[in-house]
Image (tube, rainbow, N blue to C red; front, side, top):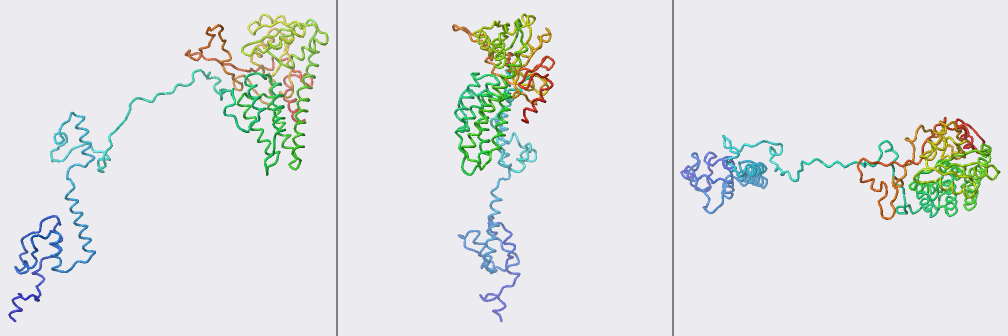
Length: 506
């Protein structure tokens, strides 16, 4: 009985009040030293039993104390270690400003002349004072600004050599070589494009005939790919050839009408027909088209226009037109004697060719440039002009300078006769030469120097404020045209759309 009351026996149980509180031990941070003072409510013997050796670490002391109450589970140990780790991180973390704020303070100190950080940013309450920003509030380091240039970006100058009024007409420059050509372009088309670009083939009718003859070669060498039909694929193949020709020079109105006719002929081919027979029929159709719409049409126009020329007349023409040349030669061969005045202009000087041809044939020819038109117009009996096309509103679309000649003739009360095939008729309408036209390279207007001397305007691109415009065509009002001679006979300009509709339907 006395042993049980004394409590010195090893097997005796201690009262709960005599043991140290487990919650009190866990509340002490792991990094702080274990308190040496024992709780006042605990007996001295209990304190001796819980005292750990001096060489045991603080963590082991905590575990040993816990084992006095009861062994912790693995989950409780893991949770305790996580809490101790978090406490150590919190103690190691500096209480001053963040890293990004320190870097900002250093940049401010270097900018202010190297003042000390305490003198530059110390406030009354001992904390660093700085201008808050969204990045510094979150503790994110601020990247210093580098490479900032306050110079405004350089504005690229527009090409001041482009005439603003005709800016919509400037497109891709003319192709002058074979570089970049599609591999599917036929060699005949390659040669034709370069000839058109260099004016080796010039004139609306000549370009139309040359294009159709080149298409004959394309069709003759064409082979339909497997699992495709000739009407469908040949049209696509011709489109590739046409794109190349357009890159060399815009298509003439007569050429565009001929291409539309050819595509209709191709679409009408029976897919079940033999390929060789179909290609032969297409080539024959092209020959008939050239014969009927151009060759025979020119003869019919020449025979009709001859009746407008009388003996002793003075006929004025501008530039070079193949149908006008045939008309003058036909009138001369009929025995009529008259004088021809050829008015020409730069840069092509096409009138030189017709003047040379007529003079070699025995005609009386006078040659002058357009600036001499006012001197010779009063002695003229009639004016014969060719046409690039006749528009749907009866206006004449021809080589630049034709409108000036027609206006001067109208002022001098001289009739203007236009010779034009119906294949050159179009339903397109134009009121001026600005909306629709063709711009040739301005370098064609430059006069090259001789003997090593610098030519006129040869350095025009280096002269500020100087612009050069080389228009190919102009539009003549229908009031200046007296009559239009076609293969269908003589008709007024107002009948052009009617004839175009009839010729298209046939």
